[in-house]
Length: 195
Image (tube, rainbow, N blue to C red):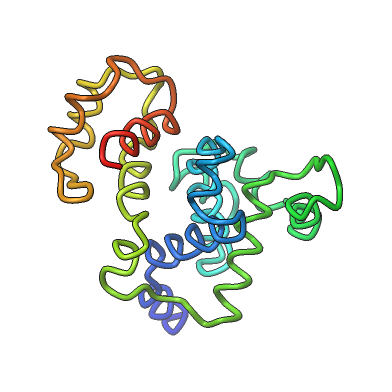
């Protein structure tokens, strides 16, 4: 049992989940493609699914333990983990028009398989910054558990210390709409302001 505990301590779950998240975005055609198709609402679901899949595969946690750790409903985690990755892949490729699977769960599973296969398990320092998506992940993680719509003042309390593309969030929030309806809308506003 001690060996398993040591192995679990050596896994950087955050780094691995971020990598699975980034690969999920790549599978969908990149962050720009998501913006073009107005699918930024997928980002929070992809982040949750990336964590759920990594926690299941690397830590062998149950869906209830994952739900508790991530602050999600157990049914949501169960849907993520039960998603048929191959069916979701066929949907993304346009081979089928509709899929009843949890899309983000299927995408995260595909991404996890790629990350494991390519043995890209740890991120190098600053890698997400170079890709330009590190700020989106940090913002989404801080928004987790918040109720929407949300006032920009509440955002400043929650996200205030982040610097995005060299601009402190406290200055970005001044240019945002007064009321934001979803995490995706927050990301869109930030993207609009910082370019």
